[in-house]
Structures are given as C-alpha cells and as structure tokens.
Amino acid sequence: MPRKPPSISTHYLRYSASNALALLAGFISFPILTRLLDNTQFGILRYYESFMLFGIAIIKLGAPHAIVRLYPYEGDAKEIRAFGTNSVMLPLMLSAMLWMLGAIGLAAWSQQRAEGFDPIFWCAVLLTPMLAASAIVQSVMRASERSDIVMASRMLGRLLELALVLAAVILVQQSALAVYGGKIAAAVLLLVWLMYWLRRNIRFAREAIDFGALRAGLIYGLPLMVHELTYAVLSNIDRVLIKQITGDFAMAGIYTIGWSLAMQVNLFISATLSEAFIPVANRVYESGGSEGVRALKKRILVPMTYAVVAIVAMVLVTGKDLIVALSGASKAASGEVFVVLGITVSLQALVGISSFGMLLKKRTMLVLMITVGTTLLNVAMNFILIPRLGYMGAAWAAAISYAAMAAAQFIGCPKGLVQLPGARTLALALFWGIVLVGVAEGTGLFGLQGAWPRLAVAGLLLAVLYVLPVLALDPELRRGVATLRARK
Image (cartoon, rainbow, N blue to C red):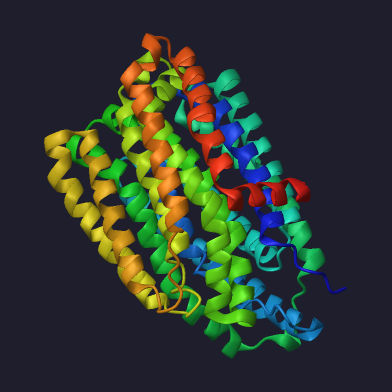
C-alpha cells in the first residue's frame, strides 16, 4: 500500500536513536577493548580492518549509491519489481561472484607464499561479503524511507556485535583474533535477518530482467564505488602508512585509538544526518528542484551549526580527558590525535551538508576526482609528516586533506545548491563557543585534575555558557527543538 513518506525530522530521530545506541555501544566496548588489548593488538585489529573496508567498497560495485539515487519514488508495483530485480538482486549476485573470484585468487596466492596469510586476514576476507550484502540491503530500506526498519536492524546488529565481541575477548582470548571471531558471529546472525526481510519485500522476476537498467545502475554506481574505495583509502591509509614507515604496530595503535573515538563523533553528527538527509533531498529535488533543496538545507543547518561548534569547543577543552577517562592513563598519548581528528570530522560534516549537490546532478565523476585528489594529497602529506612527527603527522595530514576536500566541494557544488549557515546562527554559535573555551581554558576547569571531574564541569559549562544562551537568543532554534519534541 502507498505510504506517506516520513519527514526528515522523523528520519533524523530514528537514525539518531540507532546511532546513539551504536555510540553508546562504542563507549562501552571502546574502553574495555583499549584496556584489554595493548597498543600492538589494537594496531593489528585496525590494520587488517582497513584492508577489509577496501574489499567491501570494491565488491559492492556502487550498488548502495545507485539504489538510493535511482529508487522509483513514484513507481507502481511493476516498476518496483523491475527495480528490485535489476538494481538490487542482480548486483547482489555480481558482488557474490566477484568476492568468490577474489577469495580464490587470494587462496592461490597464499599457497605461493612461504608463510601464508595471517588468520586475522582470512577473518577479514570472510567478513567482507557479509558486510557488503548487509549494506546493500540496508540501502534498499533507506531508499524506500523505511528508517524504522533501518533503525531496528542497526540496533540489532550493534547489540549482537557488542555482546559477542566482548564475550570473545573477556572469556576466550585478549587478542585481535578474538575480536574478529565475535564480529563474524554477529555478522552472520544479522545477515540472516536482513535476507529474510529482503525476501519478503524484494522479488526477483526473471521476466523483469533488463540489462539496460543494470548497466544504467552500474554507470551511476561504479564511479561512486571508486569514490568509496578512494574514500576508504583516505580514511584508513594513515594507520597502514604509520606501520609501513615506522615499522611499529604500537604507534599505529596509539593513532588508531584517537581515530576510533573521532569516528564515534562522526557517527553521531555526520553519518546520522546524511542517512536522514540524502533520501529526502533526492525526493525534494525531484519535486521542488534546487530551491526546495536549499530550503531543506537551511532548516537543517540551524541546529547543525550549533551542534558542530559545541562539539569542536568541547573537543578542544576535554578531548584529552575523554581519552584518559575511557581508556586509562596508559592511552593518554592518543588524546592529541583525537583532538585534531575530532575537530576535523565535525567541521567536515557541516561542509558536507552545505555543499551537497553534485550527486543530485549525477556528477559522479566530479565527486570521484575530488576524492582521488584528496587521497593523493593525504598520502603525500603522510610521507612528509609521519617521518617528522610520528603518529601526529598522520593526524595533521588528515586535517590538511579534509580542508582541501571541503574547498573542492564548495567549488564543485552546482550553481544554486550551495547553502551556507545563516549569518546570525553562525555568529551566535561562534561567540558563545569562544566564551565557553575561554572560560574553560582561563580557569583550567577550576584546577580540577581527574578526568571524570573535568568532564563533568565541562558539561556544566557547556549547558550554562552555550546551550542556554543560544536557545534564549535564537527563536528559530527554539522552534526546531519544539518540532523535534512534538514528533517524539
């Protein structure tokens, strides 16, 4: 039956709920894993995870991007069935075949090596198709604006992974291999549930096979596959290069701990909003054009600007304390990494919404060129800075690269689709953010020494010196908060 699409605020609340649970799970597992695994094991864990992410990006063939952009929002049952056949089921089959060929090739290569591949490497290979298939199925849910089901599947998957990974590390072995064992078990259980949902909602119809439609999806999706692969390289090459340049897994582990916490920040502010925003923006663009998308952005950028500035201020004030509170004093060296990367990903999230538009115009090659250029810059800066600054060189290389990407996104955004935060919103956010940082730094958080007391006082200052003033002075923000509360 036809469904009225939920509003973007409803989507955001649902995605916020699922990602808030993922964030909570991260804050539960992160301190446990960083305390039970030493820097070397943590470095090994993320090192092989980087290669797994590269594999996932390749075998998805860009299908999730094509599904979200080309979904027939106004289609009848026949069009939905054809879409499911040519844009979902056939790409899933192609992905499975591509993985099998790759796995056979790796097995043959392993036989030629004197020592073979590490067992953790094979765990990553086994996880790759399951995570790729899960991403494709969840993209169908996102495209059809079933954020309620996405929320349920995300929560189920994250809880399973949390329970099984912690059980493996605590009860079996304190190693990266045990972590991967828990991840594999969780991925199998989640994939079974997702395939059950897919079977009930997407039908493969032999008579609906249209290789022209499959080709159109690949033409749109393959540049974004390369973009995703390049972005995965951009996001993960730093820890690989730290290991290759320094030869030290422990140094890679120090960097990875700070990076992992920054990704929790990214999950909450960027991933949540993009999941809610992109399907709605596609629908709005089809009906209201560029003007409708700008109006949508304008509404979103009010609360988002305040949130990003607040996060940046708190990372500056308490970033190092947060690492110590969660991971212990032995991981304090990761605090500086978290500060640089936490600020970087927060600002990038704001830029991503303001300059979103190239995908609406289907300019996938331009998106790819920007990502490739950013990645090449990142690799070059890593080779320059890591020998001089160690793991902090990788952090600064990432900051420089993302700044260049932000500039390129603004330049490349099609005319009429750029929407900056309002001057009043930006001025209020920056003023009260500077006040918050100034008071916190000027008082040294009142001389407190322990990480948890400092975090508690910083949270109180955030409420008194930032949240209350901006709510009092910005009626548009108050209306937005009231709307969200009304939809709960």
